[in-house]
Length: 339
Image 1 (cartoon, one colour):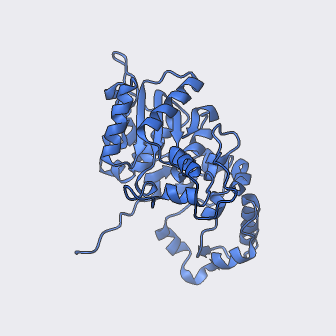
Image 2: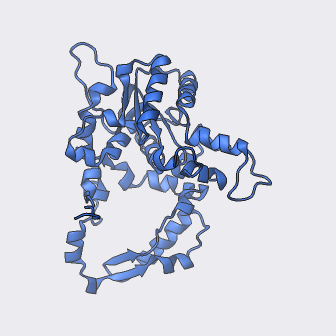
Image 3: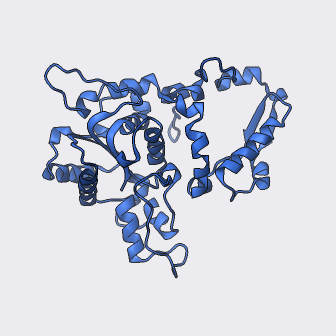
């Protein structure tokens, strides 16, 4: 009907594989496996559930505490409940105030060694999406067949970059995009992009004497360069990182939600800088079936996680997740960079 739209429901196991989507926790591990909502409704009917209001719990948990303390407090709360079925309703347990601060970093050692991360894999839908496009992403010699490396593998010669525009840019000619808002409030990098082993640190000009919601020209310039780089700034950063990494990259994959004009300008600048036109691939150039199209962002992430070198946006949650995937699957901080 006019004015209505259908919401696409995507099952977890189309996005990823591992314990989070119902796979085993590992050999001889008897922890309960994740189940579908349909099965949950059967084994835990409403009459048998303990409903926890997260808003009420968060009033008791110090919102300014480190992530590990917040996790410990929640874990104790859950362990002390006698009910076998517990449902959490209300606010986020780990909200963007935590994720956007260094307080989240206290969770890193526990998080990266947990089975949900150690056993995390791409779904078959995502793997097939990557496999179908490997010939675009790597150099093929003679009879060599394109292949998809394992999650812990590397697509040699590939530079993967993440360019976030859309809501980050806002309306053309207006300072109403997300990057401008980040600058006005002095937001630091987000999530795992803040890890101390990362080479590229948040280093904005001082906000001394600058009121909240405002920025100086110098602060604005810093945020736009690192959050919303122009095609020429992208080229300059790529050159800089290539010099530092001493890598020989032949292909480039641009994961993006950018407007066509920006992509055309970027492609032109890349070719002018020596990249072969046929070796420049964007999200829009990928060949995906209907299943992979529905999880195209995850296909982008799977490619970026395997790229020999990656450059992303330090304020983006997508970049943060790619950083996590790279650092937990054998890629190095030196090959995992930010604008």
